[in-house]
Length: 153
Image (tube, rainbow, N blue to C red; front, side):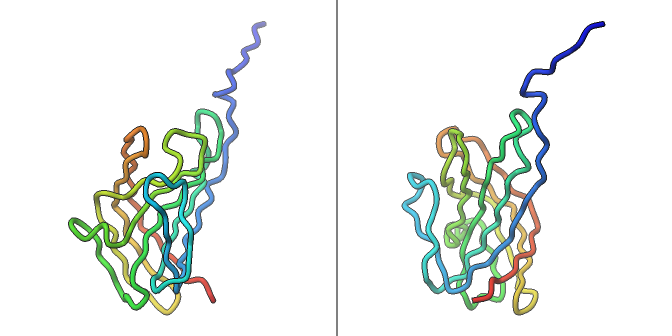
């Protein structure tokens, strides 16, 4: 009888995908671009949309790689459509919190971010956006439709 032992990278734990969709009202986020590893939420005149995910763990090593996809729009907006020349107006960023080469902020440089307010406390947002890794220039492409809830003050 022969016993097979799987290498550790094939025995990785399966993780459950954890996602969060939040809107921070009367806020804005600030950072100094690609040199920063994250951003800070401060008081402001915008709605800040944050999509957070643990990416359900890396299949290769079972690690959790927390990420955020964030952008901001004027607080009085009822809808928005950022693409082409006006994409940078929403300040969209992809942030990775990991022990990886692309850790930190990657600026969204292409695609579209569209949203419409559904009622007093939620928005439907369509993402088709691209960011490139800080150091590797790996292409991160987001294609999702998300429902966000406004946080109570």
